[in-house]
Length: 90
Image 1 (cartoon, rainbow, N blue to C red):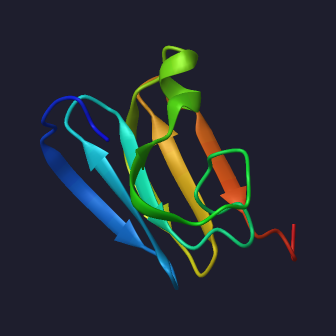
Image 2: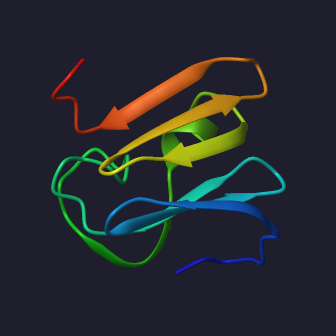
């Protein structure tokens, strides 16, 4: 459960999951998770929005996110690029 309100500025969807980006750089996700596409360090599906804490734990703010079939790519304010999920073609 989220403990405060967030302004969602962007969203992207994969085949059976969604990523939502807040104005303060927090990335939220929910959906199926068969290939780790939720970015939560497991393969458990989520039926409610969950923040991806990886970025805040590293003092990174996400500024852009895009989903593919079962993968995600995002860019942070420090111009770093991260990807996760299915990786059949490298």
